[in-house]
Amino acid sequence: MPEAETEVTSIARNFEKPNAKILIGRDATEKTFKAFASNYSLVHLATHGVIDNRHPLYSNLLLTRTDGDVENDGRLEAREIMNLRLHSDLVVLSACETANGRVAPGEGVMGMSWSFFVAGSRSLVISQWQVNSASTSKLMEDFYAGLRSRAQSDTKAMTLRQAALNLLNDPRYVHPFYWAPFVLVGSN
Image (cartoon, rainbow, N blue to C red; front, side, top):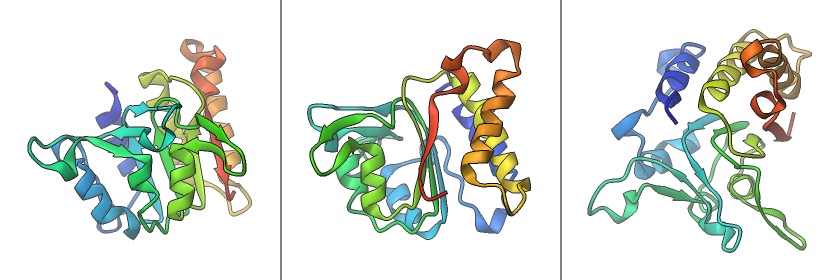
């Protein structure tokens, strides 16, 4: 995503430095993600999502690849995520089609979101279709600013809704394609 680094840098301003770990570019590897993700109550991934409906556990998020290192093949797969022990209250997958997957009887939609729930995440912000990088970056910036300043009675869903309304009010992003792809699932 062209705006991914800007998105992450902007979002990071909402958090205190000693309590945040920001991985951008070459630092955003699978090995690093797996090592640190369980330490945080909020995890944000701004990257490409690749959905495999035939083999949903091979759906993946693209991270930095390290040549010759099998643990860093650049694909954080759903099957790898579900084996993590996450303690996150919120995981945000700022990527394409992360709400999608194969519907399996007794399991629901198997894919990226399913794997994060299996790993222990309590809620996720995920996308229902391919997203525009610029509008997604703006939506995420507004969402995190809203989370930081929200009143106790505001929920994550209300905060996401307000971020979507902010986009809707921008003439560049009036069409639902820009402001409607992201949904909150899980605990509010």
